[in-house]
Length: 182
Length: 304
Image (cartoon, rainbow over all chains, first blue to last red; front, side, top):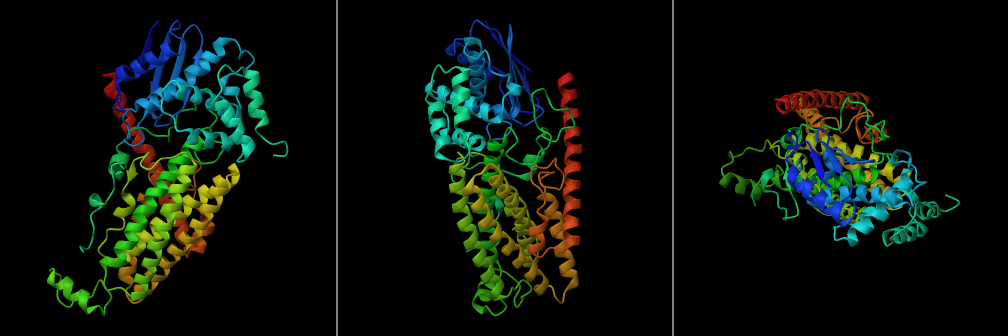
């Protein structure tokens, strides 16, 4: 199966479509998703960095240009940022397709805390695949959603180092990370 | 040691990538879009608050902006200490005259106490740089992770000390009051004790820096209303520039709000705060119009 990207060339930013396709193709193969067609649509009119994914017959990823951008050099592509942004949503898609996440809410129904927990779980796995990740960045995001205390940090560490979680396990780690009196 | 240091020669190591305001405004993309939010988005305002889905990343980016802003503020205050002499500094005057300055000209002289205040400010800014680096680490940021906009130092390059006070102490440090207030509130709402306390302490210093600028501007131009008027006009220009095309204004479309109470404490009159609110809103609307124009042009190119 193939990865397709639109637009094929960029006007607002200096991104190389072929590089994005190669990164996506490598990820799709290493995550075992190569039996699914993947379509990536980049909105280059905004510097925001939201990435959305729809899992159907085709896995469709809609990314804003900031998600793939080198923040040091505005409007230039960052291969690491691209791999991280795509890897996060592709892992979420793989989780949903794997069967253990049947009862997980759709992405737009996830709470900010649940999303932070799932992101921590995903980026930890990406790091083990060899993609550079700043763990403190994701820990800070997790703390913003679960609180700044030891209980939250322990939950983050558990998510970061986990493999093969189900939605019920992930949601429980996120729920238990917030103290009862918070 | 030379006077009036050019912005493109600021000392930075290879981690930094500097961009100008012109570069930034040439980016045809914008978060200030009139388009409806896409499916799944939860954003109703651009204000930097923890409930924004991208809050952690946006706060980290602003923290890096504060960090490089503190470096430039340190450089600006340090330059003001050095670039202007006191009226009685004969050794320095001889040195300046031998470098080609008009003999006997003391029009740029400043009071010694003003130099001392700038030295104190440089000391404060150095401490702020250290605090900002540690806060960046705490938030998962890295030095040089974002491009450095050099517009802050550019406002500190005037050869008139009164314009420096207006541009740096009142406009730049005034912006710092707005930014620190936003970040302090962010830390408070998110429950991040380090961010909240550090921003509060730095905010207190910034209020002092603006107050020093307000007081010295008044004193130095006490008998020269034309010079005071020119300085305040320059400040209005810099305030508009520092609104970053709408990044700071009263509008909820702007990530950073106008900290009216702290500005009042720093010596801004109500009329001055209203004036800044107006130029900030004008900057926001101009940026939106400019982006719409650039996006239409780019779309035509894509369609062709």
